[in-house]
Length: 179
Image (cartoon, rainbow, N blue to C red):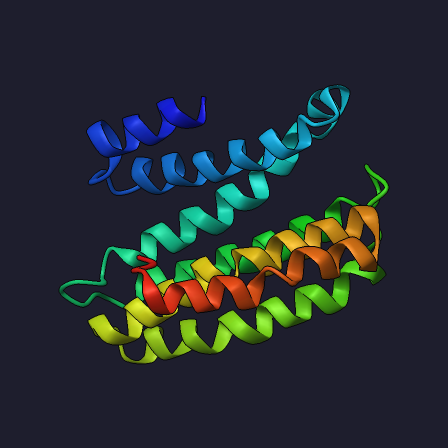
């Protein structure tokens, strides 16, 4: 499914205003469910978790459209709104799953503290360098979003284990293009 979604993004939806971001977000959503499938019975119980990276990456993809020629402020504002929806979605998990909000909260605070300033800079000055920097930051910080989810479901230790991938990702981002 992930491969088909990626191919359909490249072949069909990449330049579509809203279908492209939704498709790219769905790729990440299915990627999360691929991890959940390690416990197959959980996929049917937790399928809605795919909505979290769908919103997050959909927002990043929307903002990324201004990386080359600059853009408008609107995609950055949409990004902030979708980040708020993603954050709220995490806390909405608590009543319907065994997600521990208090355990996840420091990870979420770290995520927001790292991405919001770069998004705000891109909104204030929607030029390619600022947009590119915000998109790069948001893509790399997907690890922090994953750590937040891991911490909420499996505890601080697993959240920190996922978070330990962040320095590796940052190092690799210096060698390879992220966006």
